[in-house]
Picture 1 (tube, rainbow, N blue to C red):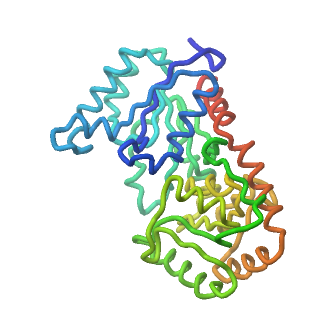
Picture 2: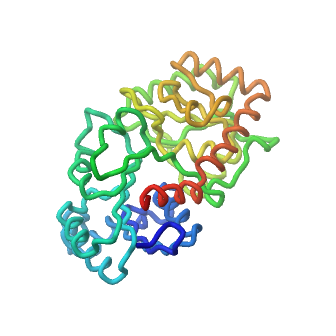
Length: 335
């Protein structure tokens, strides 16, 4: 059996968003892939949704799902991977994993998941429980009891931070002297009236004092790729408005990596306890809208935001560095 110090062959099954023309180049899918490659391993991308579409005469990922499962079995037969790593891959059936276990008894199977574990939307992650007995390890971007629920006899369970990569998050906003925006937000408010309310209140309260950029919400156009990067590089702070309808320790969308990794001041709810993971004076945390508005205005008026943003940037590029974290993942999987 190969070990993490060997040159491994890895088949990485996830979305990759290849059909979005580079729009999603900064996702966890890509950064996990890059991290493994930088550790000297061969990684074969298996973009499950794109393959499903290609193998369906209707160009549908749903109707091409069966063929995609067959394609994964054939792919592993040819590549003979040491590790099959599953990302967001709900369309891969447990029966397919059972076949792969039989065909490749020495191959490890692991999975990562970076969506929330919201009990009222359990249908989004219930499929994970069905495959736990087939996994050697499971990693998720939520900690605490939510993560503990996935513990099983044969499957190790560990927290996975949102990754940063120096070629993706390459700016240091805290070093800038001139800015286009004081605070920005990227994300949709579709089906999220609470987020819409917060953004409206923030804009109404601060627009006379701060330059606010909102992209993808309140009827504003969303931005992606280099355009989004350019805005981040010319902004002091960004809102990490992650939905937290119930306790989810250390959970955030991957937005937090984009913000901190590009050297902006990250503003996030205290209820996620992210400061417990990233450390003190690395984020601006707030309990409610009023505290967010007053704290944001005060810290941006001073230069203290630069210190906090720099601290956050340093932690993001060390503790959550893609090369470092993926090496740790392999040590866990092959332990």
